[in-house]
Image 1 (cartoon, one colour):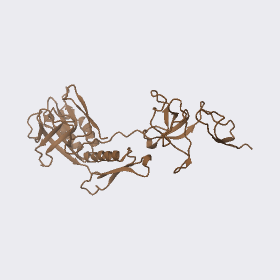
Image 2 (image 1 turned 135 degrees about the vertical axis):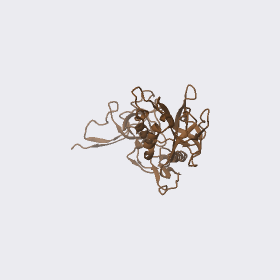
Image 3 (image 1 turned 90 degrees about the vertical axis):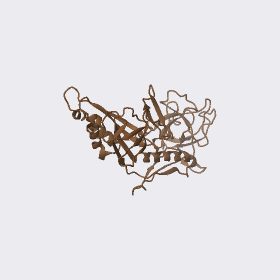
Image 4 (image 1 turned 90 degrees about the horizontal axis):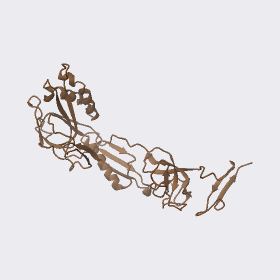
Length: 369
């Protein structure tokens, strides 16, 4: 969905924000709206509204995102969309293809593809900065000025803020020695952010060359900011894989009280899972569940509907909990087998409503010699 969150400690007692639109969701840093670049050698005082180190990196990425899914109500029409997130390198024509796309309608497909395209572009250009300004916070924006290269001036949103505190302690350690364990931690942080080439240098500079940390003696703190241009939509990377629904599972067919059959126009039924402790066993227990049949043609084939009270086997298409399907039926102590002899087989139906073992239709085979 492209939703992300951040905590703002400036809003007493602290507020958790959720957003899917970075263009309107973020406020400027309190007290100061602009941070200027000042070189490390020129910076004289700690905790100033200045940036003493700026690093940018560009990631080569695919230029398109395509996704396809299917909907049984329109099975001949693929539900899909492609978003062009073109870049200016020779691999930009390559695309990320995703199936299933996890949607049912063309409108949902377009919206999902737009979010995925934004995600691709959001990770393409990354920026980091060092500062001692104490009011920096994730989720806030500021204007950057004074870029030595003259290309990065502009408005940025702080998408990550790491505070590093180093203190020599009471054993006479130098500040560099006290801060040494911080280097691999920051290196890993930056490596996870896909900047392996500069991560070690940046981490080393933060703990040794930052003007606040370089003032030996009492220790100091500094901030590593991960920045995102405000003009570009921000979408977080999808880091948590969607856990597939475990299956197959056993369930009981349910429906309105007093009914023996509960089926919709697509031959779908309702079921109640054994792990469901809260919902009543009725027509509100689940969504409609499709039923696998032995033969399925256009107005012909095999058609046997599970009836209320029968036990069925439910699986999930592509492990999606929103797409359950009945793949089998089972007898149990409440619904015993129709024939006593193992040499007998066949089909035995029951009249409804109110039928019993003497009413219905039957095709039975006796295979005993």
